Amino acid sequence: MQRAIRWGLVVCLIASAAPKGRAQNQDQTRQLARGILKQLIEINTTDSVGNVSTAAEAMAKRLRDGGFAEGDLKVAGPNERKKNLVVRFRGTGKRKPILFIGHLDVVEALRSDWTTDPFEFIEKDGYFYGRGTEDMKEGDAILVTNFIRLKKEGFLPDRDLIVALTADEEGGSFNGVDWLVKEHRDWIDAEYCINLDGGEFEKDKDKRLLAGIQASEKVYVDFQFESLNPGGHSSVPSPDNAIYHLAGALSRLQSFSFPLRINEITRNYFERTASLASGTVSSDMKAVAKQPPDPAAVQRLSEVPYYNSLLHTTCVATMLSGGHAANALPQTARANVNCRIFPGEDPQEVLRTLERIANDPKVKVSVVPQMGPDGKVVPVVPVPPSPLLPEVTQAMEKTLATVWPGVPLVATMSTGATDGRITRIASIPTYGISCMFFDVNDNREHGKDERVGVQDFYDGVEFNYKLIKELASPR
Image 1 (tube, one colour):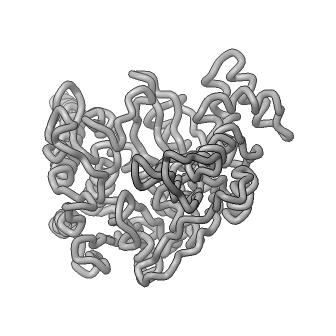
Image 2: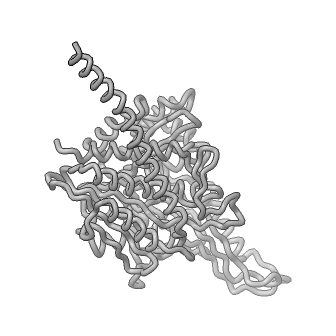
Image 3: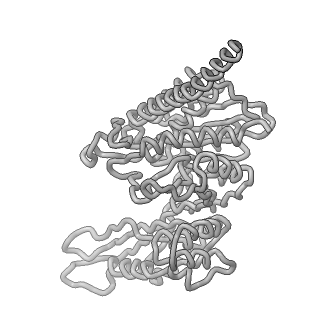
């Protein structure tokens, strides 16, 4: 009888201790993640005056202190101010590695524009504030936290796991992922890549809407519209005016729509999100996802700028200059036209289309060259979409079902551009998975008072941890 009582007491003690232990571990993880994010936010990594190398070295020290061998950490780059961090979590090698990427650099931020200091980590009203809290030092902190956490737990993956935290995604050029691919492919070569700078998880206030997996993105190309003229005295005007020629070409561009484009990724997006919409929008999404798409539905959805960007190549005037004196006829007029080209579409064909739109022999259209570190022009190449690998989608669906049951997985195409374009061009299939939720009605990325929800950040740490284990646990 007394033995039974003793065993009962033991069982009760174990039962009561387990939740407390789990809570302590959770608190330690959150404390670690918060500390890493704070450290990153307070290191200025802007292109103008910041130092990405400082952030890379700081994270290398964190990982070194967390148990990673010196030989598995590399801090390197062609620019002393813009070094990258690459860390390898060694596994059994039964499968090819997975690469995880995130960028350490951030866009510029002026203290005079912000309510708080953009380079001071501040927690208030349930949010973390600071430049990079949304784009994308929170993702960097999640990866570093979970690599340290898994190392301390003694986790042995069945494949190597690689994290690359890089420079030059937001500003500058060629010192980050591009340099790693060209100069040290062996450091980052992988079966596929997970990019935490894409694939947003969307919510509306407290309602979680969807979990995105970005498998495609548009190609960024700038074109120049230019009109040249001998000019003259403004007191003797002529219809042959460089500004008028340019204005006419831009007016024709404004009213032009590129042909419909749709692929596996965007079709999946409209199929899945139709259930989240209502009324005409929902039925139009279903009609657009059909083969062939319904033209009337395409027309209606294209009236919404975001849906229009998913369905077409888009080109828009973004910068304008002209003339040289208030009392002289303009000798030059120029505009920058920024295009986001649908995956698989030839940029040269877009150039020819823009020439037809301009429809004026006195307006020259040309590609704005992108220069490489060697001073040579870098050719613009199409970015292929990544196939939806069952290994990745199934791991995502299983993790979602565990953490947020009922939240649908939706394949997306980014209308902007990320470093994922570089890994895709390098034949490494890439999937944007942010791992944390952002409010669709409160996007402060690149803006003032950038912030991320405290609980959203901690939830993202946990989701990423479970996803890594799902992707790399021995089978």
